[in-house]
Image (tube, rainbow, N blue to C red):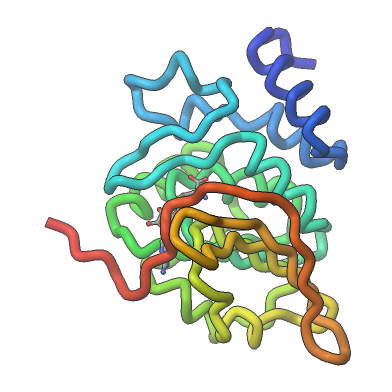
Length: 213
Ligand code: SAH
């Protein structure tokens, strides 16, 4: 058990907020979030809030990472596709819970920084590319689970197509400006079942590769 009181408080907040899966809570306890935040925000590494990272993006709030991972119902037999590597924090949590994580980021800078962290943590089940995640990763499909960590206007069709039968997709959707909601979509024999989870706030899912200076 961790001795850090800030971490204990964070884990309690997650549990009270509905993160029930013990494996998810253990992964959050184990992964050093301080490794994923900018130096100037180190003192807030275990505060339950999103923090700025390079390229104008954010590392998600720990509660949201825990909640999305919980509702994704990941097992150690699953291959998970993640859209929006960002800092690599969500990727690292997933890597502790599933067989393989395939993660896509449109900023080369962020992908490179995340790769360094994966190396430092000796993660050997993460595969990453710099690409437009709205197209998914057809060469590696199908995926038992897909998680999108940026808000889309609508669910990208490629992601629905690349979901395995019985598979689960968790994605924030911005139906109108400023109003985002998290959905869980399950692939059923008849098509797709969609379930509302909660209101959220993510950076936008942007098509195409990022232009970097
Ligand atoms: N999971 C990340 C959250 C990062 S924020 C973490 O734990 O830190 C969302 C990320 O999605 C940003 O880095 C952004 O650049 C990326 N993104 C947005 N649109 C994308 C797209 N079309 N393809 C791949 N990545 C995208």
